[in-house]
Image (cartoon, rainbow, N blue to C red; front, side, top):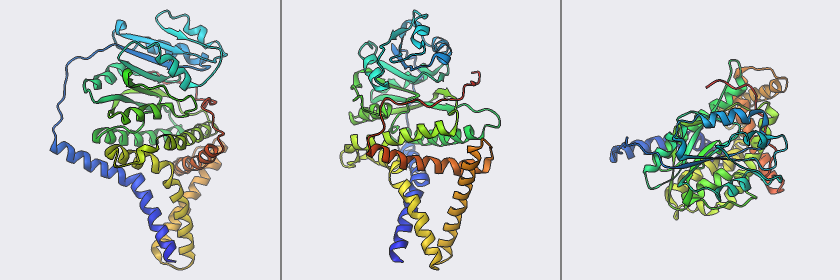
Length: 395
């Protein structure tokens, strides 16, 4: 019984810290930092030359809208180079891009994956800063200006933009994905205020060209690896919430599952590739943030969810006390709602109280699947993209 109680409290502590405690601790540390050091705000204009790189694979149905959105960005035309990489596309995406002479098109018939496309595009970049964004997103018109202003700070090696999931009325599944990203955005804001964003999202991020190092084409999460390798060079990743990429949620729960499992497999690959970041003596601040925000989320937290449920169940049925019973029945109720959410999602029936438990459980189950996919080396860096809902909200 003592061993079960130890497992119970360790699991509970890990989960509390990962999902709540880390954010609360960061908020406290950021507040202390601001009291001790007043940050200066600079309002001087800063418009350096920049290259926007868009990797597009079979985006024929959306590529024209993406191009129109790109050309409408509020940035001096003579200072903005635009590169679209359409390697492997078989639906005529590259032919649409060819209609726009302002855009540099890179196209090869063989599909080698997004990482290879980025590596190839970077070889022709001649500007000091580069911005990457996904082909299935739309950017706000001030996105580039709001990103490059952070490079006034010479210690800023990269900038992470924001991701916004566009929802329609009554779209509870989309709203749930949106809630998750709002929570992630809050953590990014705190991370950046404390020291650095921990891993940029591929929807929209930027780097100093001089700090970019080619990424192994076997890498699954290229954006994550690129940004953290810049951190390893002694630079921080800033956060620009006023520069955002907007996209629709996954077309179905099956498509979202496919995406989550891929990301999870890439997370475990990244932990192995970036194992030096686990050394808190070498990277004190970065390792603290990396382990707290990312490593725990991909490793001990999913394991702790299982151990907490099992230990609470055994302790409850052995009469260990009301506290363990309360936690067990709370978990049982939560997973019952999650099961209901799964059942309803399969039938395309929306019931809001079930979606948050369902989505939380769904993400953690995907981590287990991603782990075993990584161990079996079944996740290719050249992945089948998840389909998105096709109705876009006007911006």
